Picture: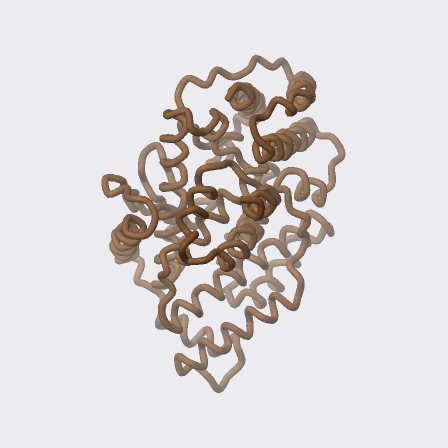
Length: 389
């Protein structure tokens, strides 16, 4: 618990340095390094500059032998190293995009291999055939399906509210009961996201500039609320207050070692709720996975290979079966230095959680959820320590 308190204070101190240096207008800058803190009264460690932050992190890492368990030691080791990589980035040190992925997000992936993309295209082809959209190219048949599948903008908020209500009921029946919790759907425009969980205000912000299908709203209801971000943060808030989780669990830290599991838990929500029904859901899931994978590839093309976005967008749009405007909007975050590697948290987090989830016996699912939500994890610590559990 003492190491957790020290790490929480140190992270808050680095967040203060970052915010002081990035006072520019814009939603992403305003979020800072810690967009959500679920515990009040975490006093930031006083830090003069990033050099002092680096020294404090190195000193912290020298004490990891005091960790209570092997899982805690491994998690604190990865998290503190990700903060060192963030400090190097903020300070302007030479650090490659590949190193940022490996150290900040804790994943070795650069671009998603083409055979995976081809496999997802095959899944989409099969679902479209089953739905009766066949006879043309994959892009043509998908476009014909999508034309009739888009939810009218003026009904989007009502539709996602209905899905959220069902997701909450399913979550209570299978996983965790939070019947008094709710995320109020609120529309917005010109935002750097499709949807956003504003946990403190309990609002689910939806960018109404984007088109949504029934499946995409169903997915967002589970990702942002039940059993995704809302449930995950609420459980961490309660566990920290009851001293069952260390204090650093009360912080959501952007582009850090915690990011992949934060997004991976949310992206597996439909699987956890056993809520993938029929060919339209299978089509929607394959599309969601395809676009998540291709955003990783786009990030690597831009930051790893130095290719301009104007060159990348048409290629990614064609492969992801999206129009150019939507694709460009979805890739706009790549211009934000802190957020640039974050996209890998979705694909890599999804696969890290899903690979284990598909191997968990039915009678052990509650044990897995307790382990998954009840500890801080990276993809590596989840795999290593669940096997031991």
